[in-house]
Length: 130
Image (cartoon, rainbow, N blue to C red; front, side, top):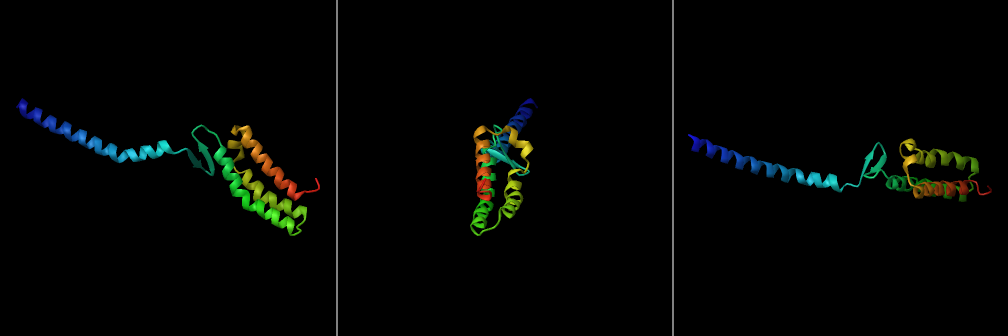
């Protein structure tokens, strides 16, 4: 009787070890994907593991680049400053200010300077006389 219980126990233990390794084999690629991910996008804001927002600032500038190019083209076409300002507020400024309270206080000085430089460049094109 005891020998039979021991054999059943060994078979069950081997089965559980094999099952556990198969489960881990199936889960491991997901764990590696989670560990390798450097940032997460949540409601349009990109957070990285250290709560730095460099990727967010880069995404904002790249998303507003076509609008910036449109401002340059409109200025060359002779559109007045008031209309360019309206275009800036609706297309560029709206992208820059989306969810700003959640990430702007925590960005680095370099990223803050990059955003401000980009906005100053837009405003210099809109108001060249200022």
